[in-house]
Image 1 (cartoon, helix red, strand yellow):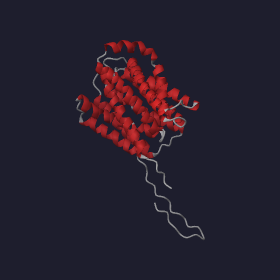
Image 2 (cartoon, one colour):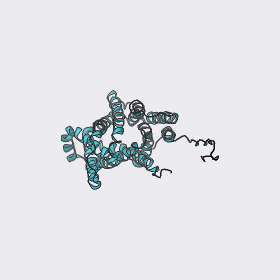
Image 3 (cartoon, rainbow, N blue to C red):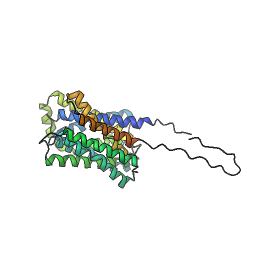
Image 4 (cartoon, rainbow, N blue to C red):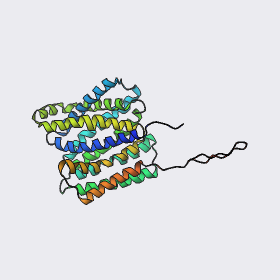
Length: 310
């Protein structure tokens, strides 16, 4: 009997995550003019926690089991908290191309940590797809890099963000075997919010002075790229390996280029477009599966000969 589970759902969840995370780069750029890195991270996480908490009440989700809290706590501090502050700060120090290039070390780290700590397989197609996507990310990053926009501090911050992102994903994976995607996301977001509470004073002061558009961008970041996208990410991650999900995020730079083109009027050059195509092609390769033919049944003595249809 074949499994009737809707296999496209995890893929659709991954696509939703990538699209929403790509839109976050545009919103961060807009809100970052009015909010400091820590205040923006806290406002985003607070908005996301409210949305997720309401959803948990509607769905009557209880507390995660105790065995899941270790992974939730680590991912909450590193990915929801530290990563967002470091990335916001890093993007104020370096140009977009350098930031995209450094942060895209994250999926490679996820693959290495996943293979080492989670026993994730590393099939040739995944490795080939990651190499192709990373080459595309490098192409996009170098083509978008502006002269004189980089700083050592910014590069270090983006690198730390990539490390926190990878560690958060790998620590989140075991928790998803014990708790639902909504539970892991909700309480991870709450942990990140608590970790960012030292920036509460900055947030209160800056909300009073910030234009409404910047505050709406911050709320959007919390509700969609955080509450919704992190939940769809957790749903998809629970149904595949950390390495394969990490490779999927290589599509983000290509989508950021497209969204910046449509929303900000920033027309990409041919080299940037070529890099985006490489990113998407690498994701397609990394998520493809080798088609295998079912082995033919060997007839047993005394039984009628039959063949298994592939």
